[in-house]
Each structure stands twice: as C-alpha cells, then as structure tokens.
Image 1 (cartoon, one colour):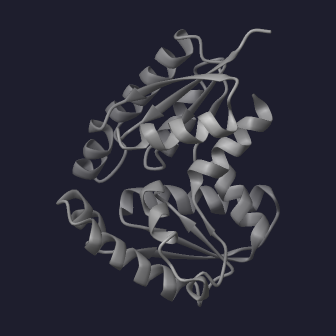
Image 2 (tube, helix red, strand yellow):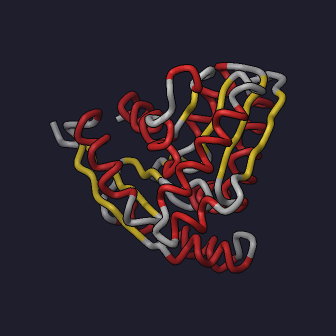
Length: 219
C-alpha cells in the first residue's frame, strides 16, 4: 500500500520540530514535508491585514505542495487562515487550516468561549472562524477575546520569561469568565504546562495536537 504524503506550510521555522514530533507520534505511516516562509506574518503585521499579494503567495505555496505530491496539506499558522481558505479553492488537494478542528472542539465544549492571542492579526481570524463554525453547527455562543499586550514583543526580543508570565496571568483571569479557552497561537501552548492544576479551571485548547489528531482520521 502506497504511503500517504502530508505537506505542512509554516510561517515560522520554530513550528517544524513541534509538528515533526506530533506527526511521528500520531501519523507514523505518513511521509511529511515542510514549506517555511517567515516573511508572511511580518508582511501582515506591517500592512495590518492580509494583502492581495500575501493571498497570492499563500495560494502559490498551496499549489507547490500539491505539485510535490501531497495527499493532504495543512497550514500551521492561524494568521493566514482566510488566505488559506481562498487559495484552497484553486487546487484539487484537500487543505486544512490548523485551527479548524480546534474551533469545532471549542464550539462542542461550551457556550462561553474565550480566545486569547499575543497578536491582533491572529486574534481576529480565529474569532471569526469560531463564530462561523458555531453558526454552521447552529449553536449559540458567547465569545470573549483577550489580546495579551507586549507578550509577542517580549518573545521576539528573546525575553521568553516575560512572555510566559503575561500569558499565564491572562489565562488565569480568562478561565474565571469562560467555559473553554482557545489559544489563537500554538506558541502559547507551552505556558499551559506551567500552570498549577487549580489555574486550569476550564479546558485550554491548542491547535497542533487537535489538528494532527484530525488528520489521523482522514489519512
């Protein structure tokens, strides 16, 4: 039987080993390859939105992955989610936004959904996706969003401790207001492991593991 091939498109090289470990554990019989371009998110931050040029570039990467023989393609960045959906219409290969299975799980878990991010460019697409998936499931939700100011800048300047402290404080506060928390960025998942059990009052969802679990059902 021919082995399936999964193409992963990243906007940060730091996510390559994260997904490599998950795929090795959960998709042992699938061959995985990576495409990385860290200038995409920088471009979104500078423009304050997804530009037509960025949309075209994302579509180009999807096409490239399809030509590389991928049976399935997953894009591991939430910031470019809308561009991913637009580009996916132009290729025959199935394409998954990394945050889609997480959004569905959040909608199924509770009514009061908290979305937390360190970048506004990631917060808005994630919130929009959850609201759209809730409407599709005909479920009424009460979304709450929280932007952790200064955390992303701290991480980019090499101060991971400040980033983690800010995110941890925001998670503790948000957990008292909602039924489930969605991490809009996979980079925040490591902070969850540092929280005391009493601070994890509600489920905290991160996209990588949930997305790879979903891929295991379709590959």
